[in-house]
Amino acid sequence: MKFANSCSSQRGATLVEMMIASFLGLIAIAIIGSAFLSTQRVVTNNSLELLIQHNLFSMSQIMKDEMLRAGYSGDIGRSVKLSGATHTIHIDNSGSDAAMAFVYLNSQSGQPIEYLNILYGKSGDEIDYCEVKSSDVMLLSAMLTRTPPSGVAMSCESVFFKKQISVSDFSLTSKEVKASGVNTQVIDFNIDATLVNTGINYSVNSSVKQRNL
Image (cartoon, rainbow, N blue to C red):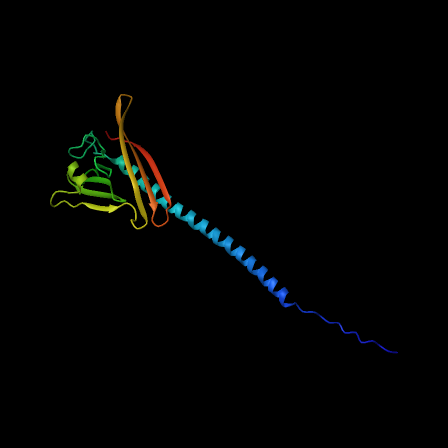
């Protein structure tokens, strides 16, 4: 009895097939990589937008809280103003950069009198916060020009990290409204700023009704 020997041969992948498979693999990697980079750009951009929004919103809240303290004088029965000012919060739009200045009693009953004289003013592409702690109210002109009298210290600093946020606009308006026979000062302010080297811009505006008249 004779048996026929059968040989089964297996054909390997050809060079052309391997090249096509490699090409398709590269396309898949490119598509996945592009989608990943696109997602990363969106995430990064959203993070930067949140950064500037948080900074401006937080600063506007700090300003509002301090403006509401303006004029506070303890128990003397009337609001306190900077010497020479006609309003509790003085708005200065006379120059190219807007500023506002005010003062309030910063000491508790029974403690030595300490007033906190405050200035918020635009300077170039920044908003500066300046303060003077004193036993008496400061001259309005001294606050606006940032020239305290001899022996009185004034500290000034930018409200934002200047290498990170550039302020393009700081505008202030003041108006008086009458309610129930009482005149009230209403301050509107706007801050427009850009995140440095990104072009991401954000603006915040708010309004404060002065309660210490």
